[in-house]
Length: 398
Image (cartoon, rainbow, N blue to C red; front, top):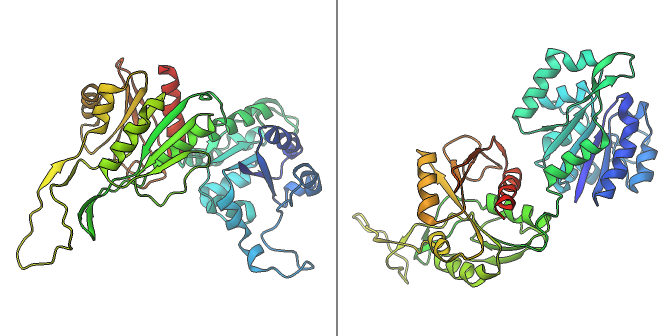
């Protein structure tokens, strides 16, 4: 996995050298990005020697360097697309303000705006700067956008004052990186079967019934389980998503094909997570020729598709069974009823009309319902973070 480590201009910049080493010990490929101010405290050569990679220091090549080409001109986009995480440590008050207000004043600010990878900031500054209302408002804004903050520690500061503002301990920063990236091996030796995406039920050779599922939640679950050491079987309806590395991918199209694939592999699974949005109904008859437009209305007769989750609930044996409930009203009532009706161990429910929780979003807002009556509401998180929270609960059940 590749992360970008942003280093900004504070006395704590020298601690980033130790941080690079610890990240490398986690088998992470580290690309260092330094602001101009950071270079006043420690040289890029230090990080180039540690990482074996070019350290990015400027948005554009200096005037005496070779003319910029297309590749260098869009380097921030290339870095943004290939990283799994952006970590900024130390993060000064200045960079927090840039991030909060969307200011792309240098390479690091532009990278923040261009990446869809999760972001962690570890602030370090004078205690008065940290406690200033402007800084606290910027931190609150970033938290609300899903940025992870490793709060500074308290103690004696380089400026001679005492209080909050010290860069968090290296181990605390590394632990946050582990948590966000799911770098745990607590599912080693387990097999997790995940379904994802929509199904398509044919009306005729050119038309079909489907739903708005993008598959992002299911794919996030597959990736998170794989990173945590599980052997993963991913049964996926049609999506445009990249299959996570190392998973056993089984593409399907219809609800019947998904049912067959799941039932064929269910006996192998310690955990079955039904995140797919399987069509509830399909045309009673699929036409072999395209239906032509007529003058009058057209009526389609629909029939229910197989209830895969309910079948698994009756036959699951030793497997932990997790279902999903995408609701538009009475979320809790519907989720509890589904939990009982399907004989699942857990239902993950969300209100798809809520901003940041609907189809095709990169975030989700869910509540986990368990058999023992517990309800665990989660704030708005990335779907990968939601996936890890779900897997945490699965481990508790195991």
